Image (cartoon, rainbow, N blue to C red):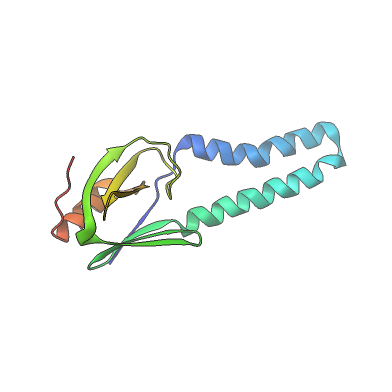
Length: 133
């Protein structure tokens, strides 16, 4: 079994920091009225950190298991029909636009962004999977 964390793009880090940083800066100019916004922003940032911590891609003997918060998808490795690079911004369990598009089953697809893309692909190959580019 091998576990891969999601890669995180700089744009995503800046976006998360701004959700907390902007209310703090505004608080210096507006006074105590900003506290509700700051608390909501802090909750949102905490949620995103939890989501990131819970996002991982696990390759077991016969399955790719994708975890993202409460979301969990088990994909039998044998059902994977192709894996290719993608820059799609479609919603997915990935924190980077440097993604892999995994097609499996009857026309299903999912986008993931393992930090160690080469290791991830090599690990899939260890399970007698031949990726299509």
